[in-house]
Length: 113
Image 1 (cartoon, helix red, strand yellow):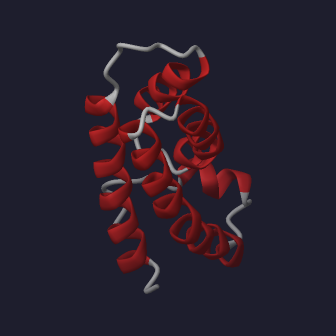
Image 2 (image 1 turned 135 degrees about the vertical axis):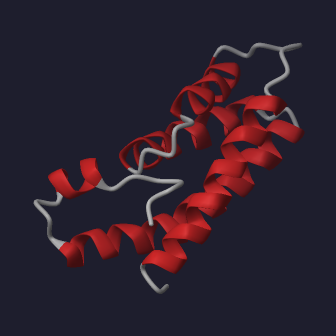
């Protein structure tokens, strides 16, 4: 449990309300993998605005679940925000996507979702 994500900050925010934590885990599974797919598509298509918006949306959740890739997600966000044409963020994207996939599988298992 909690190998690819961490709950201690979330537990503090939720004041150890397990029902609330479960609801946030469900929300993570509903939103983050879908957003990750959008982010992947945006980077692959060099749609900088979509990459910026999607990465920006994902930051709070990635941060609170402590996936350990917030810095990489910010690099992708900044690539889109500052239109850093010619810069390759695919290595960062691969790291973010892998972390999300591993965390999603683990959350599903840990919360029996």
